[in-house]
Length: 370
Image (cartoon, rainbow, N blue to C red; front, side, top):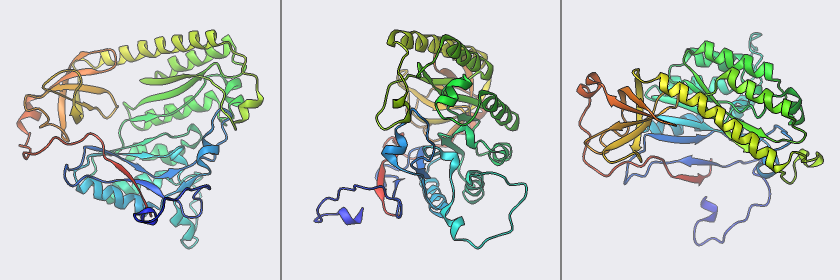
């Protein structure tokens, strides 16, 4: 920030920047060029009050960036060579555009009952930055998977066919204790609507095991939900107490040994589901955005499909594929990824890449003033 530039003394912020929020912005390094992917912050803070979560205390209430700033940043990134952008926010789909509060009151659409304006932001990005190849967002809250957001997935080809949608538990009793404000039935219904809107869409999730009072039956309901939804991947965590959270008033009464056993069972199921999904993709043809060099071996690059599967691809020219979306035939599946070969059609359409240093996989983030 300009106020902390030399020779000014450092500034320690002791309150949340509610009135004049500042946001991290991704900027391409002109000496290295843009990476294929970038992250753009659209909001920060959280107005949810999940009983296990310390974020409202540490990051404050929700603050939103004006849509014009978000679109302008994405436009600059794409002009610099970025192919895919991920929108960031603690509950990203609760986004509200500050500019709407300043606009004259318009006649409301009786069909629009959404609490957020996130879908409108997605549509504006798609319309005003047509050269953007892929658009993702993380992490949404199931409570804000609204009809307009589902319709955006139906209508916007730029939206990747993958959503990370944290569920936390498959037990309604636990969801109520967690203050998640939806039921497992509502979660399953909204997941089904997303998949119906965009065929082939995959879901991943977050799950907490061993939350206060969780019984064997509660945990079994979580396993049942994982099977029913068929998550392509998940992040699992053992519950642990955090200061300043409502759950401190509850007894942390699930033994550590039980938490570990449940987490192991959850991961075993998740790996079984993922293995089945990856094996089923062998022989298919996928569009892969190449992001950088692969850790799987020399002369290989790695990228992701629209559904977020990781694919390793042989590339004799080193990193010449980085930044390209290539058609790949999947030839092998691994525990957490795939191996593919570039199809003859995609190989024939490749263009020579100018000589220069390999492009970085991510962009540096710097704090700037709005």
